[in-house]
Image (tube, rainbow, N blue to C red; front, side):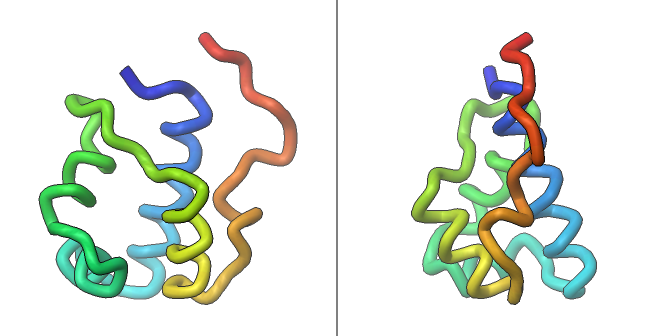
Length: 78
């Protein structure tokens, strides 16, 4: 199960991806990953999530700072 911070980060990445008119397949290609991975990350049914390395790569691709994907304050675990 994904944590609240995982869900927050995933949502922020997805919002930015959509703002830039990129599909999951586009993002996967730019990251050098499978389309299935992005789909699993964006689905609540799978535990897959982005790690710090991914966030750094995503920031480069999505032309923003890795900080843009993180909450301003800590989120509760539950």
